[in-house]
Image 1 (spheres, rainbow, N blue to C red):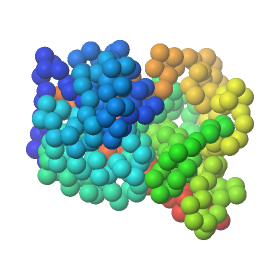
Image 2: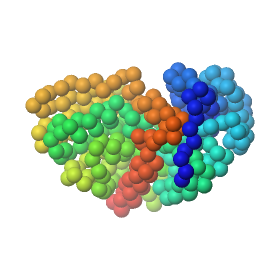
Image 3: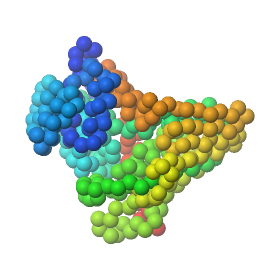
Image 4: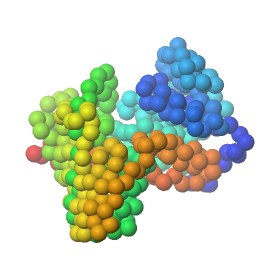
Length: 332
């Protein structure tokens, strides 16, 4: 692949959202506040909805349909925020139209889809970025640094709790459109956390209470995933969308090492390091979800032609781990 294009700082970066839902509203609101050099456009199969989003969110324009948005030569970037089943087709169309692409998680229905994406990137000389905000969360960054610095010695066990009640509806309850259940749709973020704290995942095994993959269209709501790491550690991820928790999502997780431990609130509110030098850490509230850091990294990479911190290879790894979790769960 030839060198990515560079967009001068004095040229507005023109980005169109494909899909006008809640996540588009969240990203657009943040971009408008923090990245004034980005001009936003909105596209939907419902042109009226796209126009409404543009008016409400300070957009520069709207499109009735995705083909017209991608055909506009002034657009630099397509941000795909539609149901998962549409991601691959829209990614390939956007690359063919000469746009860089940011695609929401989960990126594609299966990890093998990345092969088509890689070929299309090579042919178009454009790039794809997968919007994995958990990689950029202050919590994840802090855990990476603590583990790298040996704050608790060699990591032995990770116990991560991501238990809550979350109601869904619409396309998220249709496995043919969503691609999977709770672990696929939301748990993939937590899988990324388990794989992005400085340890290398060797294998995963999963079990889902009450889940029978043999029942056509059934979507699991809870999954226990066990990770084994090259470094010798073992991790457990408790993920659920049908298990009540304090304050609808307040959970305490733990990392145990050879010389201490780390207790942390799973959402990233605080960390407690128990070692020779005990510490109470607030990772950061301003960008607790990591969206701001993620967008800053992606937009800078698109402008400069540099590499983002979260790579396409990492995104593929995460999806492969989720696929393996489903495969092993089906055997239990």
